[in-house]
Length: 405
Image (tube, rainbow, N blue to C red; front, side):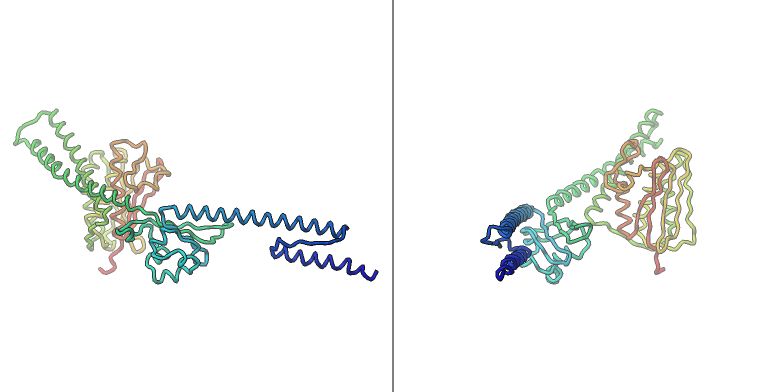
């Protein structure tokens, strides 16, 4: 009876100690009770549990380590620069390409507070704080071009970090530059002979040179129309080359919106008359002046009016409205044509995009609206479209008011 309390209390105390060790992830802890009674059975059960937990822990850890090494191998084998940053702005990892571009070894980047390193590293500062998708970096002994993508890492809809990817597009950029140069050269070379052909056609239509019969006159008109279309295409290609090289030469000037409107309407009048289309203009004299490149802005408005006339039915009305919108002037052209399907509206300003199923004689090169967008945005304006299938289309753009007049 004297020994009985200890007989009960000591195994319970050892069991409590063993449970504490297990809770601290010490799965090597084992219980040894000499007696072959219920406490002995309890010790065996405890030891089996500890062994299973130890087995699971090591297998799970091995699996995690394997996945970690596999992911690291994949990331380091990629040709893109990749950096992982947690939600507190600490660098978790950086692959070999990223380390080479930044100019720092991995051991000096990993675990460091990114903004501190960015204070003395221009590239990392641009990667973290500058909102730009394309970057030019001196790498591999030459100027290289990269695109930057930032991917958010989430857990249960909560952002826990981000991954920055720098993709090397130098080869693609060089091919694009070569393509742009080729287009500009060919377009320039074509423009001179086409202009000469058109001049010769004008001479042939002059009765002082000699008479032509009706059939010949029709052929001359067809040749003139095709030549005009080719000249338009070459002009658009030249404008595209100018835009792609980033060499848009803007000549800003102070002008009233009516000057832009009058010039554009006059230029499009003959095309509208062919389809007996009325161009209804609403441009009040009371509107303030704008700061704009007159030639390029007029080109954009002519392009919008030309498209509106082209897609409108005969004897229709095209509305050209100009109004003040906040600190800007909005020019809008609305037609009553077939409209644009909603799924194509977002792509209408893309280069070379043409609406599937449209008539071949109406689609053009797919460059006009893309160039118009570049011309307007280069002046700090905005261009857009509102349309739906069977509802017609409303194209519009804005230009800043000249507040210094």
